[in-house]
Length: 166
Image (cartoon, rainbow, N blue to C red):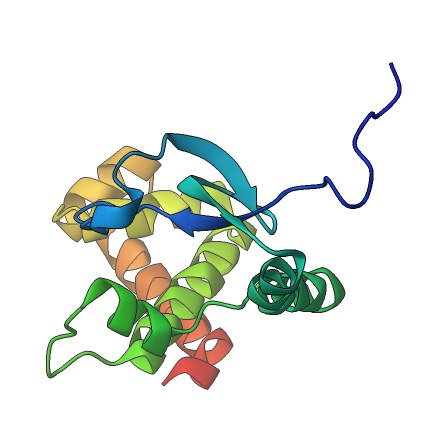
């Protein structure tokens, strides 16, 4: 079916976005609230009849912003923006660098532990869980003195491999 409207008859509507808690102005209370697109966003809005000039003037900044986002991608999120948007409060002793370093240290420690022999991992695991050297020795088939020597060598090896984190 062909469009029967001519350019003279074409109607323009400016969307007035309705947000929660917004008081609708008295002159627009009879208008129907509907879902519509403003740029690339779908929002609840009242469509207000306007002239073509007003419509273009109203929509131009929205179109410009959509084009900018298409060219440059979506807005990046920064810690400062999140702080402002969500009113986040960080503790006074919050240190992001320290947290990142701890995570990197744990990842490096896991890589080092995976590279060890199974008996060495068993020794370290049992020592970390509070077993005595004698109990560890019985479990792995070594003497208490051999477990002690091996434990100290493992600690020295791990300390050497993880020296960048000290």
